[in-house]
Length: 509
Image (cartoon, rainbow, N blue to C red; front, side, top):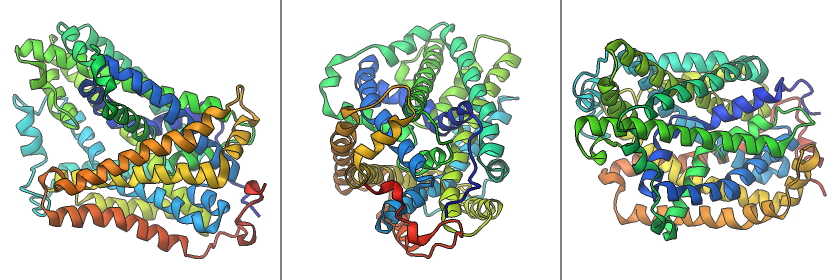
């Protein structure tokens, strides 16, 4: 029989705060603003919102409906669809497991910089401080360089927090934590944004972010970029949302919950864009340099450009320090709320299949993840992070999203997705979901995957040596699939799951 003691969210608000917390992460602060900056500014919002409606929402409805109906994480849900599909669930949950190894390290950077903010320890040259004194960046991925103890200590804090939150379960751990962290993050971001918008020169920065270049929206690559941003920022196809939805009470509004989650995440995207570009605009004007000289894409915006801007703010140093503390605390909160969802994705998968306690599986994952994170806490960490993230994002997530859309769209059927999603929802969905899940999303994700593959063989990624591309990139990407196939072949030992009924009546016609 099914596990009658399966945990549940205690409130709809707790579920929403947790899904939004899972979706809003460190990337919101530096990926979306610069995606818009490079792809038409304000004009980019047109393909972005179109992608939200045709990819973000329908895929969120699909995953919420699937996880809720199957009452299981990704592995159990796909196994109920058919034992031959179980490997997809394991493959999905392998992604956050790998990502956690380096994501926890970036959260540790945020924690370190929170402490640095008390004295502005980055000094007059934040760029040299970040790459040199703090990270000690080595010559390449095979040159481990020195061990960064301050980063390692931060990683310990991150994994301990993840352990203590998730070991207490959905209602007793994750929901309680996210009911505090997600609203607090929103308040901090509003304060930071308001201060940024009131700085002299803010308009200069916002023009780079919002001034529309409508000629660019005729470029297909801009639309692909919009779909990529929406897909990766909503934490889809990695088992997180399926796992979270499996703990929803029976009478839950799937459709509204999906809209709220997706558009709350996009609101954080836009808010981060306003905050980042207004403050960088001030820094550019105050330094009397062109905007593109202060704008640093990726993590550089948080750990190089922002510290420099903080040191230049027109206020007493103590208030500059407080502003820095708020900003890096926001990064830290965003990171923790996302990382606990990654940990829960794999934990739910394992708990569904094996006869093991939650505390034991969380402890094993945390110890293994911490050991993996230690490689990133070295001088080679940035190189390893860059290569692994590129292959996991470009091939793991994009390919898994494509496979998930095809399997759930055609094998499971969009009819069952809509039927279950509409059951207790205030407003219903129809043909729009069929079109998006079965045709538009597979087309977009398939094109993205092929383009990434073509670019991969044109030249080694970022100029790294072939040995690193194979050893750290392709090995990890292919290894996730091999491990997933192995785990899917292992016997089910959870006494609450009957193997005779693994292809549950939920999927029968």
